[in-house]
Image (tube, rainbow, N blue to C red):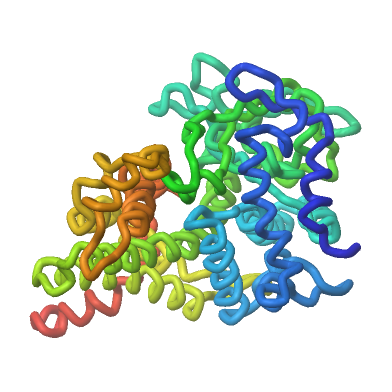
Length: 478
């Protein structure tokens, strides 16, 4: 099948899916005044495939002709580097907001290929053919695929089967000749309202007694019994002068509720193998952290570019403390970029799939997350207080007030007040608004917590050579 056009993508979402926004049923997500912005943002992926400038990066040669590069399973470091470059480019077109409609789903598909292959070899199951068939379905259809992984959890000190409420983790409540039935809820499900398919994954390690919760499968977004409650966060009305990013770009998360959703056996990729739940969750996260660092790059580049330009507009570029902050912002951005690329170059190939180096990509993600708020402080310090005290678009457009604004808020070297305010508003959006809050929470919690990254780094690092070197220099052991 040919690649989907942006208009075909939008039309394909009119499929009767059950989506609620602020308590009201949304009949057409593409036409909704808020959710429709997210749909337009997601269409970036489909527009890139039609743009001669972006097509060589966005489209790969598949077994049956051209396909989205996201559906080109990475087989080498070069494949991972191209995938990272595509994610970075798409996010840059998205105004620093990741598109995610194929990135996250194909992260999950890579993980499912690996875990299904391992489970089939060690347990005699037959999951891999199902994963491969579903992958072909998504690749041929050029589909948008979300991932529902994070359970609502209830009492986080207890495991799935220990909860007072049995549905705090998604579980299999019954099965028959046709398939399984799911019940429960997932949270933080990104791009679900404008995806075609939703892959359900376990969120943690599991043990004996958790068999009903050890489940991975795929569910159409319009499946009977599936309800998506969209988060309203970041939906305040703005204009392109005051909110130049979020006026045009948005990503929606949902509380995704499964009320006895039927899943055919051919779409079931794990059921009851509790010892595989944790490894599947971890394998997905390692692919997804590679995606995460790739999509952070336009944002950290914007920190550098906007701060430098603001320093020029404010006439402070030669100040030593400003140059110090800019040097630190440059280092922050380039370390993230360099570590992501090195994680691709140092990949390992497992069952024919290139897996990013887990230690290096977790170091990159940890570096980004732990230094994020300090980077914001540097940007804010350079920009100044007008981030939160500047006049509005209506003031600038007013005949009398506009004259006053233009007279008093110009920048160094004759920079017009309007240009200075546009830059201030762009910086305000990434540092002080609800969009900034959204990005800040993503920095800490998305793709796994800071503590999870530390644990992975500790577990991944082979310290034997370092220990032996220390012993040798200390004269221990002969």
